[in-house]
Image 1: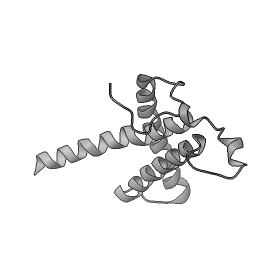
Image 2: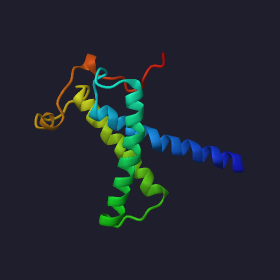
Image 3: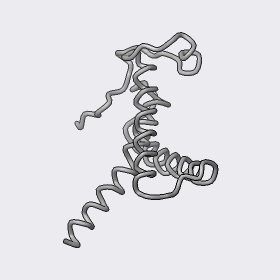
Image 4: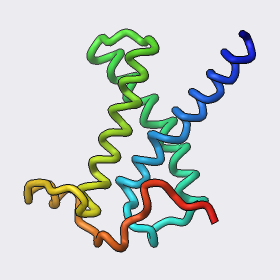
Amino acid sequence: MALLETLGGVFLFAFAAIVPGYFLSLAFFPSKNEVGRLERAAFSVFFSISSISIAVLIENQLLGIPLNFFSVAATIFLIITLGFAVFMIRSQRMQAPGFVYRLFPKIGQNDAAEIIPKIK
């Protein structure tokens, strides 16, 4: 039983340390020509650690939301969703009102990075 708990903890840590930042890196750098794979991986870890820490701190200190598994999981899901939505809007795969494109400039669909990178 301890082995399963340990593996589950390692999986959750790896998920939280990579996935939210990956979607934020897609939002900030949607073009496949802007950053390489190694840079995107480094940005993924950096953005995950920093964005989750700041978001949870703001939630706790300003909004009074207690720190528990569900609040942190909801924060991670929110960061993933926001990053994915901005990427979809910038790569013109999802339509948005015109004023949104002043904040998030468009890129061509053919220039957009892949959501799930191919391993060569």
